[in-house]
Length: 76
View 1 (spheres, helix red, strand yellow):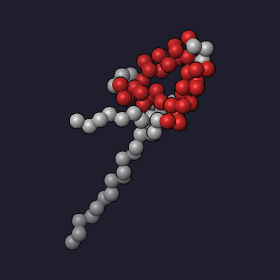
View 2 (cartoon, rainbow, N blue to C red):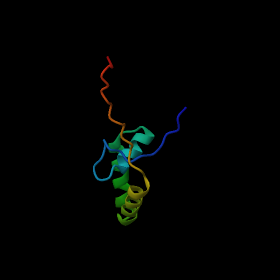
View 3 (cartoon, helix red, strand yellow):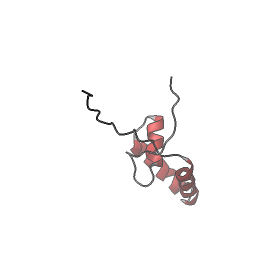
View 4 (cartoon, rainbow, N blue to C red):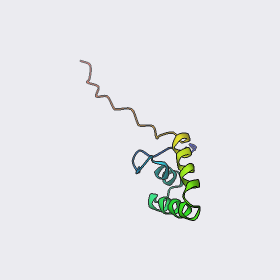
């Protein structure tokens, strides 16, 4: 079984992909993560969550992109 890794999402991205990456990691809808993030940010006077988001943006790597497929012509 392959271990799950946390990445910033390249697909479900609004600012930096942090919420999208968390949603993909926990396999839940990204809207729920964003609503939880906003609720905690409003309850804690915005500054701590803003700092958390900036730190997560720096620490969490972006999702690796798969290498492009090369069309190999058959050798005659």
